[in-house]
Length: 161
Image 1 (cartoon, one colour):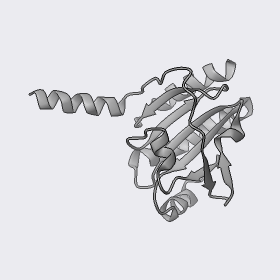
Image 2 (image 1 turned 180 degrees about the vertical axis):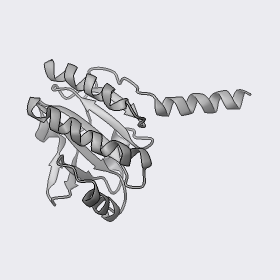
Image 3 (image 1 turned 120 degrees about the vertical axis):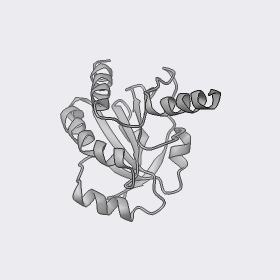
Image 4 (image 1 turned 135 degrees about the vertical axis):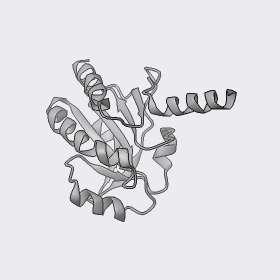
């Protein structure tokens, strides 16, 4: 019985959003993009940044991606950007999948998981929202329908700060 409770608690910890400590500086990074250029988090200083860690084999990631695109389009002109960070060692599957499900926000490739480790990503998808001052404000693990509303609530709050 105790093992079941521990397993349930662990499953819930992965599925539920977790607030990171405010004031925690977001780890800086630079990754190659699908356009072939390096993109750094520092390029977006002063903006609200949502980083979504994903993989093409991840069902919830595939479900979430079109919703992320609509969030990006809705809030991009308000000082908000989104960075999709693909975590697969070989980016070919991700590039092929994005041909079927195109997005306009930057897609970056974390082939050796260095950035995923910096952000303590434990499962797919994982989403981090960073405020204009460069502090991690939200860490959301997993995806279920309706989570996009929580993302938008956080984004609306942070773009007003």
